[in-house]
Image (tube, rainbow over all chains, first blue to last red):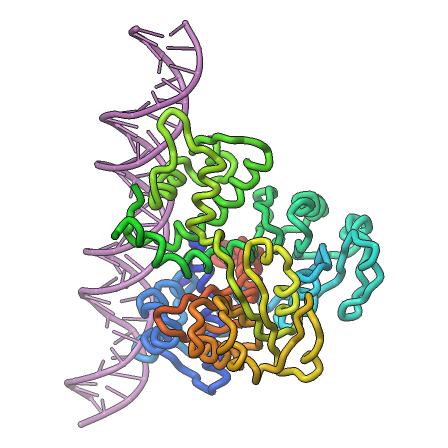
Length: 217
Length: 217
DNA sequence: ATTTCTATGTTATTATATAAACATATTTAA
DNA sequence: TTAAATATGTTTATATAATAACATAGAAAT
C-alpha cells in the first residue's frame, strides 16, 4: 500500500524521468517492464527504481514486473499531470517569450492565461493570442482569474516584488527564472530555474581536471 | 592547502550560489564575512560553508573570517569564469533564441559564435549580429572555429545526432536543453536543463499535500 | 500439477552528505 | 600586554540516500 511518509526531493526529482522513459516504452508498444530492464534504460539501479516506486504504492507484480501503461498513468497522477493548471508569465523578455511559446507545456495541461510586462514597448504585443498587459494590471487580473502557477521571468531586481504580488493574491506555486532566492510563505512552493548557475556548473566541470594540477606537480 | 580529492556534485552545485551572494556583498561594500553571517544570508549552515570552501583551499582566517573580494575572485577562478568561452547554439526556436539573447552570458565570458537551424525560414535571420546558418554547415564550421561549448536547443528527436556531431569535432562541453539523456564520451561533460522536469516537479509539490489524503481518511 | 524461474516489496548494509563539536590561531578589547 | 572573544579548518557524529540481500508471490515451463 502507499506510504504517507514524507517523500524526499531526491525521489521527487526522479519521477519526471520515470514518466519520460515509460512514455517512450509506450510509444514502442512495450507493455511490461521489470525494474532490471528499466534500470538498463534509465540508468538508475533496479533497487532504486523499486524503492522509489514503492514510496507511492505497490504497482508491480512479483514474477511479472510492472504494467507500463498502468505505471505511466499512476506516475502521471502522482505528478499531478491529470489536472489542468492556469498560469501567468510575468516578464516578457526573451526568456518569458520562450516559455510562453513552449507549446509542450500546453500539452501537459499548463494553460497560459496572461502575460505581463512593465516595458511599454511590449505591452499590447500578442504572443499566442495573448496580449501582453501592463504589470500594474497584474493584481486586478489575479483577483478575477483563478491562477495556479506564476512564472517569474523578470530581472532579479523586481523578482521579489512580483513574488509578493503573486503570493498575496493566493497563488501557491511559483516557477522562478530570476537569479534570486525568493522569500515566500511556507505554504507556497517555488521551483527555480537558474540558468546562470547551470552554465557555471558546466564551466566548472569543463575545467575541473586542470583545477588541482598545479598543486600535484 | 587545496585538496585534490574528487569534489561531489552537491558541493559543485552550491558554488554558483556562493559566487552570487559574494557578488551581492561586494555590491554592498561589505569586505569581510564570517561563515556564520554568510550562513544567515545564503541559508546553508556555517559548517557546510566552511567545509565546502575548504575543498578548494584555506581561504579564511581564524578570528577574522573571509575577505569577500578575495573569496569572490577565488570562486570565480574555481568556476572557470576568468576564461573566455566560445559557444554555438543549435536550434533557433524560441528557446534557442532566448538563450542567444540572454546578454548575461556574454558578460560572464560565454561568447556566441554561431547559430544553426535546419528550418529554411530561420536561416539567414540575424540574432545579435549572428546570422542563423544551415545546420548542414555545422561540421564545417566546427572544423575551422574553436568552440568550447555546444548549446543544444533542438527537439528531442535530433538532439542525439547533434551531440554526435559536436563530440566528433572535439567539443568537450554540452549545455543540453532537449528533453533527452544524451550518450556522450566519458571526457565530455553535459549539463542538462530539463524544463519539463522542473515544471513537473513543481506540479508534484503543488499537489503533494493531497496525494496521500484518501488513504489517511 | 509440480517445479523452476522471475522479479517484486522490504529489510539490512554501505556510502554519502550534512551538522555538530572542538582545538587553535588571530583579532579585539580591557 | 594580557584576557576574552571570534571564527577558522578539521574531526567526529548524525542523518540521509543508495545499494545489496533476501524471503516470497506469482509466472512460465515441464
